[in-house]
Length: 175
Image: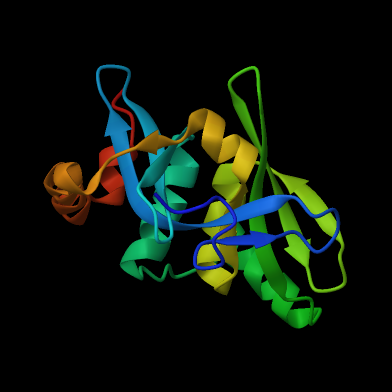
């Protein structure tokens, strides 16, 4: 087991000393039978996964970014990226900052210490377009993270294979 403050996967927030764990986006999928999309994050260098239920539009935005899809006109998250670029305000980080009553909260972090509250799904979609690091407060990951030991990694690999075959159209609801 790796210590919670192991520098290979955990940093400390510059502002208040809160332990933060870097995350990577595994992908998006539709949870059955509810047909609710989720984004699955994994702690960098660790075995914990963080599933977050999201909306269909945000699932499509994340899937587009992950697959490198470029639309004819900018989607909302592309527009935000372009706006940040035009204003020379790079997004430094996205932090999953809280979990209250089953609802996740996130913050967009900028280079001068300014933070902006955001939904995690929007924050992740924007981070994927800007290259910003995605991380979680350790307390959130400790509460909602799911440990999948290495011996179960083949199950995760099956999930990844599933993600490779899913398309954004799979998130559209039928009328």
